[in-house]
Image 1 (cartoon, rainbow, N blue to C red):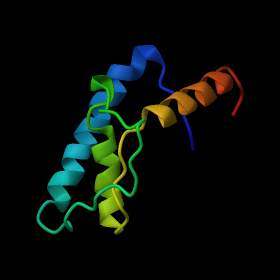
Image 2 (image 1 turned 180 degrees about the vertical axis):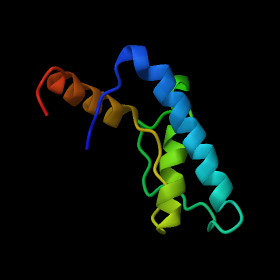
Image 3 (image 1 turned 90 degrees about the horizontal axis):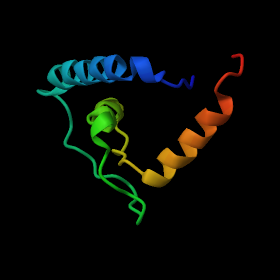
Image 4 (image 1 turned 120 degrees about the vertical axis):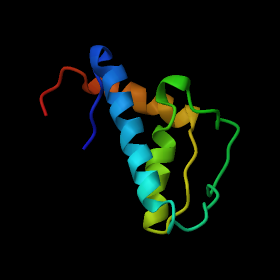
Length: 93
């Protein structure tokens, strides 16, 4: 399922996801395996934007739980994802 966050709900959604990530990290902290480095790196990799801070880590918490490598923020993927979401905006599910 893919969804876009309406601008008026963005801060509330980000806060919720950060809280959820903190809870998951606390739950897994004592028994989680060592962080697995991301599998690839490209010139398009960049720091996660402040407005999304913690979202990649929240995703990686679950990836570690099932034993798959961490991911990194990719500006290139973010651009493609935003273009896709913009195309879908206003369409019925």
